[in-house]
Amino acid sequence: MPRVEPKSNKNLIICPRTKQFTDLLVCSVNCQYHCNCEEYKSKITIEQLESFIKNHPEYEIKGELMATKKQSVEKKFWIINKDKTITEVEEKEIISNPQEYVDKEIWERPPYKYELVISLKRVRA
Image (tube, rainbow, N blue to C red; front, side, top):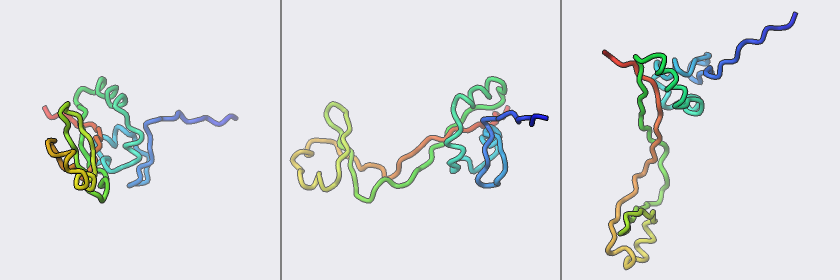
C-alpha cells in the first residue's frame, strides 16, 4: 500500500526552547520568549497574522521594539544639514575638521539598533 503523506503545515516550527512542534500562531499568542526567538522572527509574516485576525476578531496585532546588538565601539554622530538630511560621521572626523561642522546641528547616534517584532494579543472586552 502507498504510504499516506501527511499534509504539510507551513506554520509548524520546532520550538528551540521546548524542542516540540508548535504552530506559529499559537507561539505568537502564548510564548513569552518569541521576541528573542530567531525561528519565530524568520518564519512569521504580517500576512499570516492579518489572515488570522480576519477569522478571529478577538485578537489584534501588536508590535514590540527589541534592541539588537550594539552597533560599534567608535562613537558616531548624526549631522543634520540645512536641508534636513542626516549624515553619519565618526567622532575623529568632526575633531579633525571642525570648521565643516560649526553651524550644523550635531546629535550623538544611539548605540543600539532596534527591530520590530510582531505578535498577536487577545483583546480584553
